[in-house]
Amino acid sequence: MDDQTTKLLLKKVKKHKKWTETVFVNPIYWEVNGTPYYMAGFTKNNQPVASAYLTTGEEKLEEALIAQPKLSLFADLSSNILSVGAERTNIEAAFYTKPLGIAITEKEPAVMQGREAFVQLWEVQQKFKALVKDYKNYYDDVLARGRITEEDISKTQETAIMVNMYQYLTLKTLLDQNAEIRSFINSLERTNGWSDLTKDERIFVKGITENIDKMRKNLEGLDLIIVEDFNEMKKLNYGKMIEDNKKIIEGQRQYIRYPK
View 1 (tube, one colour):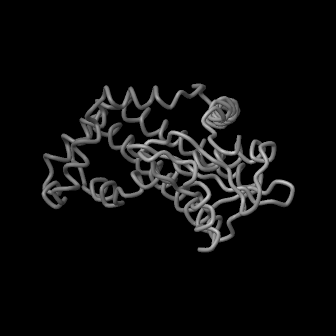
View 2 (cartoon, rainbow, N blue to C red):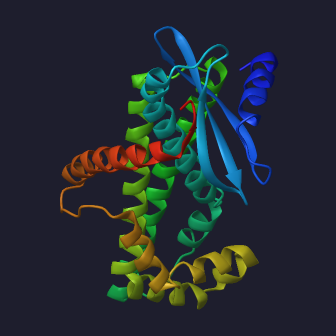
């Protein structure tokens, strides 16, 4: 979105804001009958309180209501993907690879099972990081072109469900094999290689099995349908996400401040 369009849309949306609010305009647009519609937001104390759907010309309510679910869904899902992604991808690879590179002499089943679980966590982390990196590059391209289509909505929904699936796999491993991972970590602490880890690496490794209650809460918060087969679970939860998002987006309509 060029500077001239940004200034025009901000000028329009500021006419509808309350004095305690701040406003923003998302640079992404959805085209309705050849007219680009942009989503603007009103926030108070960094929390969204209302939205507006704007063009550089005259807005029509019926067109705005067509654009609203597309723009809102894309904004909500992409924001969540990038937010969760930034948190997870900031974890350095060495936090996994260096502990796994330490030779352990203790071969008790619990220790070896814990090491295998740690390997699984590292494998999921690599897939997660690749997923988010791909989406970030894709999102940068969306920003450059501005316009989104149904293809972009689908791409974002597919990425969102995989983000949830990878979070599920990570939390499930940490919860189901918590004791075994602890055994592996305790074994690591008794090796000469433990001192080769940095302070941050040791903190990460020792902390990965802690806060079980929080992990359970986070797992429940994903609100996923749980089945044994990964692909079937992904399919079921993709459909569930579509239906859940429809209800959420529909509920957001009451907060549209403009056009009326």
